[in-house]
Image (cartoon, rainbow, N blue to C red):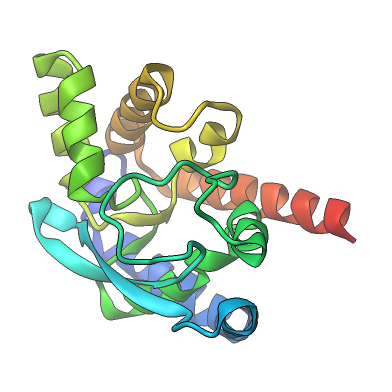
Length: 207
């Protein structure tokens, strides 16, 4: 089973629930620690909700640990080195710990473990401005055909790219389109495995 057949299958949903349930005892406490660090740093609410575009283009409110001075901004993130991020926020971003609360959305059915990421409307507008019209239409389909993912191929590859550059946006479209057409059990597991390696390498360097 590959492509949209896998993305929309009950088997993928069952796998997502299994993995999310197994990770929750680690992810939720880790996110709570991150939120506590943010609160201690500036005394402001450490968790916020932000509208993202989900399955079939339907917006949903994403639960997230705040990493910037103000979590209400609707413009695109500039990665782990975003100058708007606080010192603890940059650490949370580098290890993707700020995303850990998204496991809640997997359990609720808003998200999957591995699929193209849910974007702000601002991000999608940037994609429309940069991509050729035919490529944008294919990317728009690929990025909304299923539940958006906590992790994705592009999320793992984007580390070495300048955020929001033309090369960054083009590579996002290529990865998301490939993820949609080639989706399968093995690809999901590879994405999750690659993400775990990146996270572990960050923890190892930090320690």
